[in-house]
Length: 274
Image 1 (tube, rainbow, N blue to C red):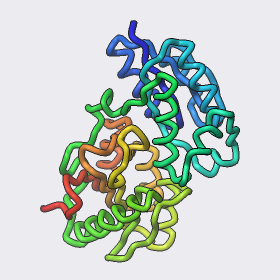
Image 2: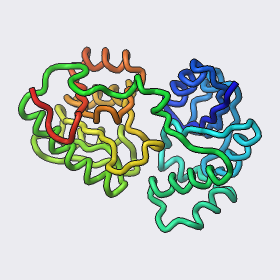
Image 3: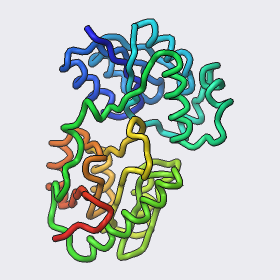
């Protein structure tokens, strides 16, 4: 059968990708990262090898040995933990030596180019998971009021600027005030920090970074992020339609409805109507 490589990070996305790929009749060869990837992924793929963050050359050898010609990157990395656990091999050092910037997108593009130089093309996981991309409009929870629409519009504008700087994807807003911007801590910690400053009722906006390579780090939200929002009393989660993956979607939407949290997917950077 045709073979696809899976370079797996954390969360449920590697598992969801593996199921989708195998449903298409593909053999899935996974390289999973210690301290990040869920061990249960082993039951969803055909072969799994464990690597450490930074072992680019080792991943290439694993995939080449299995005859992989295309691979995806699926799942995130807790960046502070990844830095602490980084074990760069010659493959990563070879990539880093050519970089002028070590920002996320520049590094990932350079890694993808190095994989392609070794006969492995990196493709977007979203092309296998189109049914998980958020459709435009209100997906769960109550209708947005005028104040929430204004906060969503502000958060989307600020998130675009944050993304152009290749810093993060998430902004927390309340009553026209920007409370938190996502940086190295990740989405959930950003939400908690914003709510610590703004109290209950904050609005969370997460969007695709302008110019972002769709092969890497697509925005994704799931039940774990929703649980954080419930815990801090957030009122709205706004994402970008067609660019955001909804993980464990039935569980996500039902949890939002139960909690009275509006989940809204924007079709543009402007505030939603109605």
